[in-house]
Length: 233
Image 1 (cartoon, rainbow, N blue to C red):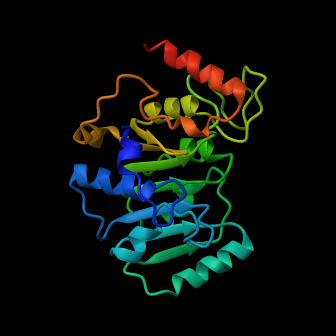
Image 2: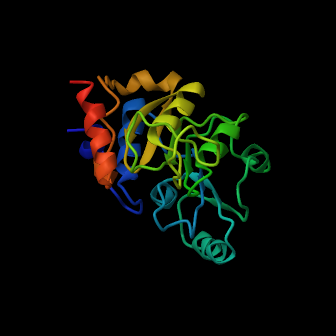
């Protein structure tokens, strides 16, 4: 059983990310209390949130960023609820300015968790982040295309593919360049910073052990996945 299938548990998230986070924190011996989180696009702070559970139930502070007017107003309503943690709402569409946005908050450079879900430019926002080094990163990808196919959304790629987000392999390459290691794939990819990763005691033999194959829908991509997996047999 994969790490994801064993520990997934959803309270608000789409794919059970809270359960994965709980297990990671348990293995790292990190308490969620008094820690900081950043999530965007946050929507109303609740729908499909990977982090709201921790703000609601622990003394965990969060920077929630949402650019859409209607969704931001819904986020403001969420902030009025009785929560154990504090939400700092910010109305902004993220480009390559996340460092500057976070610099105007009290979030520390070494904060606990960054969750990125903006349907396209996820790769570029994380790539541009230089001043902050969260311990855990959850980031959306184009999950329908298996490794080792490389594609970066918004760049000229040496392929005929036109996708709505960056592929697993290209996001993995970015994570490695930023000193992060892969934990599992849920539909999002989850990474832990290298100086913490060894505490997780994860020993993967190949990149498919924690790639969630159910997202691969097209016949062509299923064939590509089978060929790639066969290389590791």
